[in-house]
Every structure is written in structure tokens, then in C-alpha cells.
Length: 301
Image (cartoon, one colour):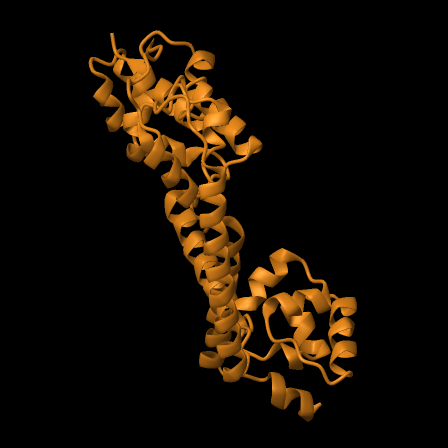
């Protein structure tokens, strides 16, 4: 009895303290239960600030991923291991062909020989060959061989040029025939037809540099053509009114794709009517480098 009495017997001030403590606990509980502390403010997930923040995070993540990628240093392709070959993107068969070749105590001394032995694709060869590092004596040997081949090729080109030189029917590039173009060294049946087809698409060459736009035509070959043929008379092109032309008709312009056509129509709707064709330059992201060729087929009326 005395044991319980010693634990539950309090004087008046202690009882008051316990009473006030109980009251305080009850008040806190009531406040927690009946008062809403949630904020009315909401954060828009798609706000510019949030999107910008996420873009910064993605950018930092991309940089970090790029830093973690293993770097490729110059190496001698004769000593590629299974692990190294896999890192470079080679298949097990390609690596095995190299290892079998090396077991014969032979070496590959150029990227062409490497491809011949391993049979890797052109795309993979172009990707990894810049890192090939052959011994200095091999490099000098390759350079000497390349120089000899270059001289032989140049000699053959000159001989072929003088042998195949034929008279042309015209100097006007817009009237030249396929046979005329084929008198240029490096131009065969395929490219001569391709040039004429592109010339038809343009309604004729208005600028000499438009020849460089012919798909697959090398710059050196194009320069040979322009040294022989010139634009005697500029073609008379069919122009369309940019203020009234339809979307489908505007797409026929050889220098206007779908996205640019859409931008022109949006700008036309915005300004109601273009007073001058040069207003196209006001369009955001307009390809100014193509302006002179685009307006060949347009007029603002």
C-alpha cells in the first residue's frame, strides 16, 4: 500500500501542474484534428520554371554520362583483344578473324588491310580507323604508296581526259545535253541524267552554284563542269504570288520544305499580306542562306 501511495500521492502544486499539462495536451490534439494546415497554393508541374529546372537536370545528367563513357585512345589494331574489340563494336567473328590472322605472324599495315582481314563494315571502319596507330616505318611506307597511287591516278586521269575529249553542242549549261555532260571526266550516264533532272526541277540553273546541289556530285567534278559550261541566259521562271498561293503549290518550290512552308503561311496570316517579298527575312528561323534561291519562284503582289 505504501508502495502505491509513494507513486500516486502529490501535493497541491504538483496536482495543478499535472492538470495544466493534461489541458495543454488536449488543446494541441484539438488544434491538430480540427484545424487545416494545408496551403491553398499549388505548384504547376508544367510551369516554365519547373520545366527549365528539369532541363538543367537532364543537361547535367547528359554531361555526366558523357564523362563516364570510356575514351578511345590511339592504338595498334594488330593487338586488339576480345575486350577491346567488343568496346569498339566488333563482333566475335570479326575479332576471331583478326586473331587467326595474327597467329600466322602477319600484321595488318593499313585500315584497308584491317577491313580485308576482319570484314568489318565500312561504317564501323570509318568510326574506329581514325584511332589506328601504326609504327612509324609503316606510316612512311603507306604515305609513299599513296603518293605513287596518286601520281598514277593523275596520269591516268590526264590521259583519259585527252583521249575522251569530244566536242560539245553548246556552252550553255541550261541547254547542254546528257552527251555534253558526259564529255566531262567523272560524269557518266547516271550523273548526266541526274543533272538534267535537277535542272528540270529548278526550271533551269539561275546560279552556277546550284550545280553543287545535285545529289552525290563531288565538288571537284562540279567545278570541272562550271569551267566548261556557263549560264548564257538566265531561265524565265514561273513565279507564284506568296499572298495567294496555296500550301500545296508553295511546297513545289524546290527550296521550301513542309516546316518552312508552314512558317511562311503562319507569318502571312499574322501580317495579313506581304508588301514586299523581302519580308520573308522577318520570319523567325528563316534560312537566309537560301533566300536568293527561294525568291526566284515567289513574288509579293
